Image (cartoon, rainbow, N blue to C red):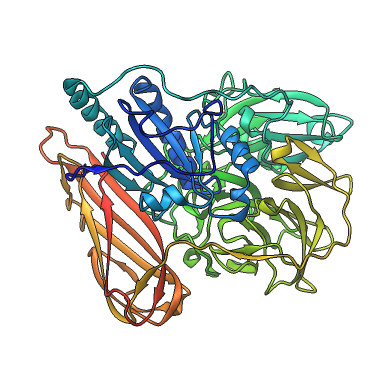
Length: 607
């Protein structure tokens, strides 16, 4: 991680208000003597959630010298809502002060261009480093250690407690539940069906009566962790009941997407036994392939939902913008759809683009796998090896609009349920609504509104039940024939103006100290470039090994998708370790006469 050589005063912190400070507003002057780490995040972004977890060990290790401040910088309209920000801070266990910056004032003052972005301010108030993306924890550890040593020698470091004030503890049975499934009585040797709910912020699973309120049983001790016994989870989400014949061979009945642990867990209903069935616990940061892997030896990345389809468990792998599969009998896993490019493109599964898929449901005839693609605010489906989009227009177009599917809009949906009559119910999370898509008429309608961040929907005894996550409950909304002409919204991010015709793209790679590019097993770098819409990029698309490329652009606007990676090894160590650095950029561009003819992006090496 490279420190800035020039001494630049850090801009002041400005926004609407503060959370986790006991009502106090903070200034950089108040924090003089502390190292300040600014985390520019937004709660829809799975990469931002990864960073929250990467920072927890640093906050503990440097607790008396480091102040982490989350700068909440919204993408979606719902994320500008003050109550929604406060709920997200609690939901994700954010244990540091948060500046609510709905107008992106501080974001712009620090020249942030992507979610997440980190900035480090030294004890004297100077900006010493900034970086985009995730995976910087080890480099930050080294930088913080250097700053502690330097400023202790100078006498400018002040040890002691920080400004964080914990909010009051909640008192509800469920806390930000994520997903739910029906447990048929016959599968449990019981007389009545029950519901199994992922109680995400309580890091456990809860079995409820079909009234959605009576707590029958809890699985998990309720603390973040990954032990099988006593059972621990870390913000679990999706649940999948295996077919009985498969469960009898696998030795468990339910597959759980243990999201923040980057694991799949198996639960045996007869005794509540929990087993880790897929994942290493490490977050995936490799090169994508479509091979079968030993399920316990492969890295996963924020699995958000799971469903039985096509003879296997399909996983909504939100952290890599892909779908994966898991075979509980063969105990293997691999990629099912997607390229890791975060955007919207249909077609053959291996060539598609997705954006944080978060909800799955299989049609009653088993032919279609429906999915809620959250970051493109889209409803999509897989059929006969091809991915299609039913509703949705892209990463930056969203809203609440009913009518013909071509013009209808959602806002960050997280849940979906394929119904017996062929229609599809959608938990339209950031619109606080339950929506319905009819494939026959090709239209979208609104069934219910005023729901609090609905994250899943299911059918219980012929009634629709909604997981109303931010209200900490399951509800049976009164559904009716609402019609919403609604609002059409678009994310307005700072746009890079580029010239039509030839444009030079250069990725500047800065290896971590003590490392060098490693070409032992072939080229050490890789660059993948694409665009949405695809017609924006006339030449220069595809994968090559050089980090420098000439693009040819057509006039228009859209998003340039750039994925770069570099393989390095320790330069002088006796037993050198290997490292892989990878960064994805979605750069909003406008191609107009007079635009720039060069675009440079920085890829910083990881330890």
